[in-house]
Image (cartoon, rainbow, N blue to C red; front, side, top):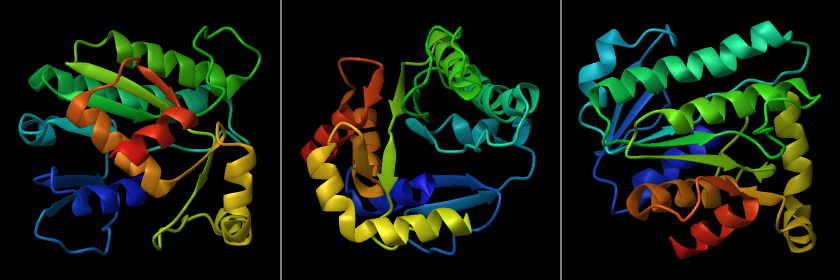
Length: 213
């Protein structure tokens, strides 16, 4: 869902010359800027390193829910998977800006009680330690899909559909906890283009950047 929102904003933004989507399945979209690579093993990237060498930024939007998962399994699909991609990228392109979609409540200390927050914190810290030109951690809380973007998880999408009419009220009451896929996509582009004064961004930062962009 987040990746689809980011893609829409990239295709619409004149600052973005081209978009390379690396995904598990086709996006179903066509656009002169867009090129897609279907990739099946997200722990191995040897065949894609030449592609990485030509990019200015990576918007890493992959993620899984921790519900029902052991810490080992969640670590493999969060820390191991993300770092496999990031290390492959930085090895051929240290000039790249890496933007990682993480989540509100992430534990930078890596010591808290909440499993997913520890793992996300460990992932963030490892990414920030890599020698990219810059790395930014985006920690949105509630994200409302807009512009036709939909979640692939059925019960999530049902919730978003119900919440859509209430979003303006929720955002007015909790601006620090709410954003949209469009604002997040625009914020990613803005940070990739001009940077930001801190490496960890919350929903308030995302909304401000989305408006600026």
